[in-house]
Length: 236
Image (cartoon, rainbow, N blue to C red; front, top):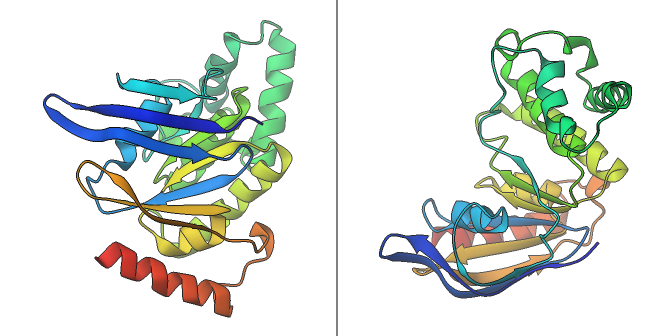
């Protein structure tokens, strides 16, 4: 997978520049967790990567489009789970039988196949998020953007869905840019972490976690030390 590279990117809203000659590289196939205070520019960064916000400078490596998991599931409430996912595939897969097979396989992987004919309004919050994750992985993109999708979940459900995310990534690797305020999410999910700060925003500090994602123990000394570091950086 190609790296996704922002070079001298400037973007903002009206007269306010959130990014100003901003440089950052996301390594292909890795999960980069981006953290920082509310309003610092994390979602602006995602919108630039998604092509949703005008900017100057160069963004390379994202030409094939992106998948996006939002804070809210953004499912269409009037139609079934299956039809929500079928809408994603129609533009890229004309064969109806192949689309159905792909949808059923992805819902099975996301552990939500039994709810395929229900409408989103009949699902729990956790079930709806599983569908949103399935939708993101169905779309044939090498880049996955995540904007705090687990923010409103209790700890137990969050950990279960993060395991589902890990399973999906192991089976369908993506270059992931993952926004969160939750340090433990970072410790469990990141290959690389980046803390943003300032106005316009800049990279305050960054680092890597070399422990395999599937076997991390939050109590281990390395992760406990990194938790203290991230707590300090996010408190400054």
